[in-house]
Amino acid sequence: MDVNDIWERFISLLRDEPGMIQAEWKKSAGIPFLYLTTIKTDRHEVEHMIMKCAARAMRGKRLNAETVFVRSHHKQWVYRHRFYVPLEKMFCCGNLCSDCIRFR
Image (cartoon, rainbow, N blue to C red; front, side, top):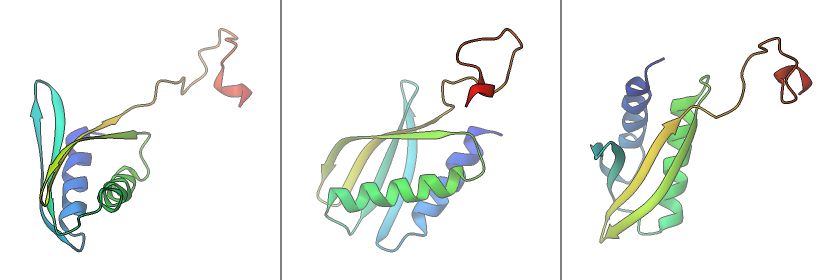
């Protein structure tokens, strides 16, 4: 699984959303930023659209997404958005750890 493939699918899904004019992502200082131009003016609607597309892009993968609002100006929105692997054990190492995956 390559995270760049997830990003490409995510941006493609965002571009197909109704009301979306432009969607792109750029890395600045190693941090991925999401630049959206949309006709929607409500921040909650835009964030819901982002999370819906992120969930569809991550479907079947063991990933999480984090989105943080940065700024908006008229119809352009900027978010810090990242996909990451959860920090939890995903296999049993056989050392009888207290947080073993077998105990879930």
